[in-house]
Image (cartoon, rainbow, N blue to C red; front, side, top):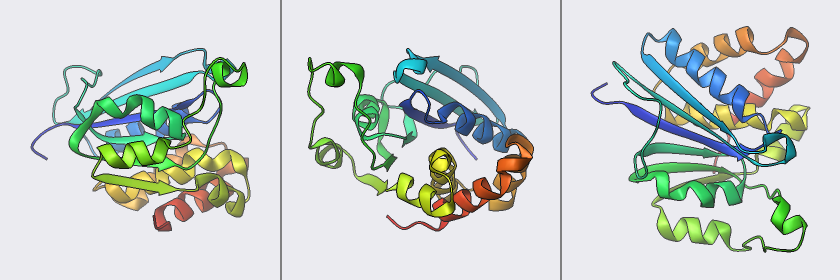
Length: 193
C-alpha cells in the first residue's frame, strides 16, 4: 500500500456511525497498519451531524482529512452525503444509504430537504453506490443494524479479508446482538447497488 487511505463516515446522531468507525479502525489495527481517527459530534443526541474521519496506512501523521482528499465517503443518510461531498477525491467513491432523516431546520420548517439530493451527488461524482440499508437491516432482523449493513458494503470496497471484519465485529458487538449483526454485515457485503 503506497499511500494512506482516507475514509469519511457521515450520518446523524443515533445511526451508529461511531460503532462503524470503531469496527473499521479495529480492522485496520488487525492488519497492522497505522490508523488515526477523529470524531465530530455536532448535537449528535438531537439528530445532528456526526462525522468520523479514519485515515490509515504505513504511517499517518494526522487524523484530519483535508477537503477533496477522501477516498471513500460512507454516508448513512442522503443529506449528509451531499453536505460532505466536497471532501471526496475526484476519483473517490461515495457509498450512500438511501434514507432520509430530516434535520431540525427542516422539521421546524425553516429549511427544505433537497428532493434531488441523489441526483446532485450523481452529477458531481463518478462512483456513487446507493443501497437501501434500512430495508436490508430489517430483512436481517433489526433496523438498528443499518450501520453494520453499511460496513458490509464498505468491506467490499476495501482490500481487506472479510474474515477480519467478522472477527472485529465479534470483539466489538455485545454477544446478544452478534448474530443479527453478522447477518446484517453479510447482507451488506452481498448487496448490489
